[in-house]
Image (tube, rainbow, N blue to C red; front, top):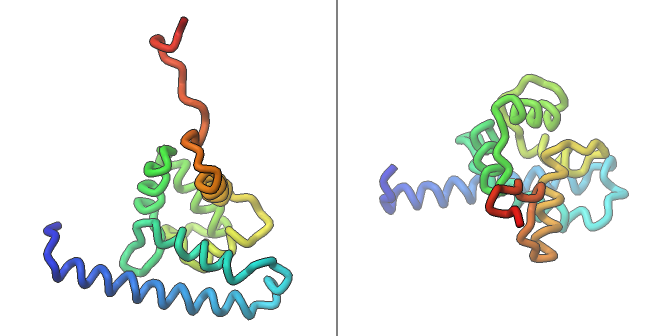
Length: 147
């Protein structure tokens, strides 16, 4: 794709449109009695929104399997297609959907179940706070590491 100004502008517009949509979902969550007990809900929702927007969202503003794959690769956690499908099923509650909507995403992040994706994102978030470089499992030892 060429980096034309038009494309950039359209992309910026798409992003701000997506953000508006996410903001309105956040609003709904803020008034949801189910989450009334949640501490710092507004700041959590803001954080989750930023995190969600780090994914490559499809034209509907949802995370599809490629978006999930790219995000995990960015975090140094490449997954197989099957693992990705499992992770998605876990987030959307076993439904055979091909995307994770922001609603699904928030339900996962605020829910009681520890979905793998949630653990990865929480861990990654904590890693950022402590400014740690080591994320994920320890590096595999290679022959050059041997004494």
